[in-house]
Image (cartoon, rainbow, N blue to C red; front, side):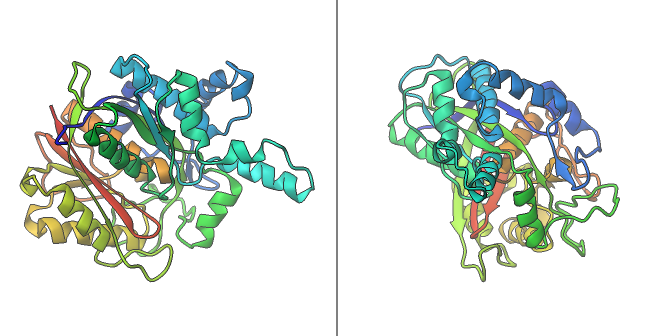
Length: 380
């Protein structure tokens, strides 16, 4: 079925804040929101208080992982904006790269001490996120989650588009949630030698800087959730005008190809029915690693040509890499730029031109294993 898909509302929280006004104000300045020792994009105390208030609502919420609580909070806000009424047709798919990171680490410590909690398995499984969101809002439709590492949220959107266009339902709650700021998860990234060093630079994460001589990725926490619908309503914000995906053969589990083959495939597919010159902005995945950033920029040059590359931007230099939630927060950045008709630059990137009108934005993401997704959103 050739149905159009619209975004009707969203909710989010990250190091930038948790209200659209605060988040947009944070985008308008040239400050980053990364703390140090180690460098990370952590929620502010007032956002953590919002999550703690949810925990106190029910004894069932008391022991949930932060990734689940962030998804519940963000979903509530998305539903407020969309003004949906809850019924049994609404699907839910909220992706995560790591799932219940902090709970897993706690339960593993208990396991090593020969003390295992009977709730260790149900509270740490990935499906825990969408199912608890469904419990919270009283939805009875299909509820599932998946992990495709850093492109998890974009794959949740792709999957929802398939359900919506097939006519299985006409509304879907999608997004990503990640709370990876735990000792083991940070140590994993440091072991890969991609984590930024605390060298007191003004901008410790140099995402999108292709000529850097060292890796500058750092982790952040956050969630972003969207309401997708097939019938435009007075609350519809943008249309998803294009989508694409691609994979590539990689030399090892965490690598990407130098030419960004997966991105070339996903961007070309997303542009199949669109004029590439109509793309005003690309919100890049660029995690802050040397190879990852170069690979994506090389792919963009291949698809668009050096003379017609849209304005490139990213939010990872501000909030860190939120893994499975990262592309959802990139979509939110795109929505805010489109809503306010203002391009948000990266302060250490030189721009020859920036768009005065923003009508179409491409959002890229890629996960470990060379798994890329490109989405195009269009102003209504």
